[in-house]
Image 1 (cartoon, helix red, strand yellow):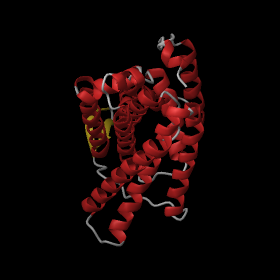
Image 2: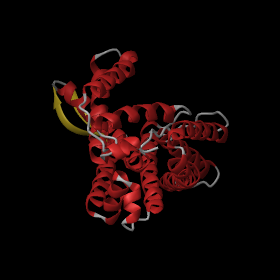
Image 3: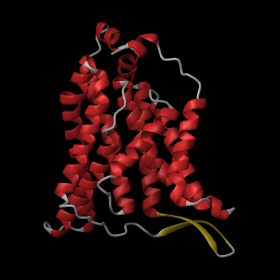
Image 4: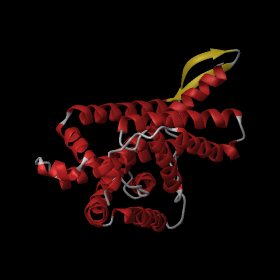
Length: 304
């Protein structure tokens, strides 16, 4: 029982990262209504920027470790804002208005470009952060087995909870949330009612990218390294997770991400890990097949 509880706690940590990713993906998809393959790439790119900036601060600027990590986090968030701004203005918004079905190919190209930028910036080398806040916090113990989480895992979980709670509250009660739901439902009607559709579009892409960047920073701090292809793998996972949780409902998508993290951790504990991704993807496909049709409005289905 304690072993199972340990896997649940591990799954909560990974679920917090997936929840942030899924929330951000659903936020962007609400105004895009097309598959966005660049979302996972922003996650991986932010993690790589975090590590590269931290290495620069440590080796070149001779900063202390906290200052180094702060520099890396700020650099990752700033680059995420820059990428999202260029992506929204120069790629997604023009295509959404003229040829929305081309968004899938365009975001795949953006994903490849971000992975290559990260690889070239790192000179195809892997840089590693030292273990951070690795002191275990004891929850339960029995017969020599201890149920623990590290300080970093707890910090990541709390950070994700705070970000998701604040974002969900603003989305439910704030002006941006009302305008986002209007653009989500019908951008032409929203524009006729005085909503600045372009501004809402840019804000949604920026907010979703910041969620992905925050998840990338958390993953970089926990793993110590983000590979060049990590963004593509996480992007495919969050694509399925958000589909099951709800493409147009960020809070439900986040819950789907949390459940996905728990499922991954449980599989890794009890079954062959080399088959984990295959079975998890098969399970998600099955859920998509069995999931009842949410009944999108006909106007949305025919758009584009």
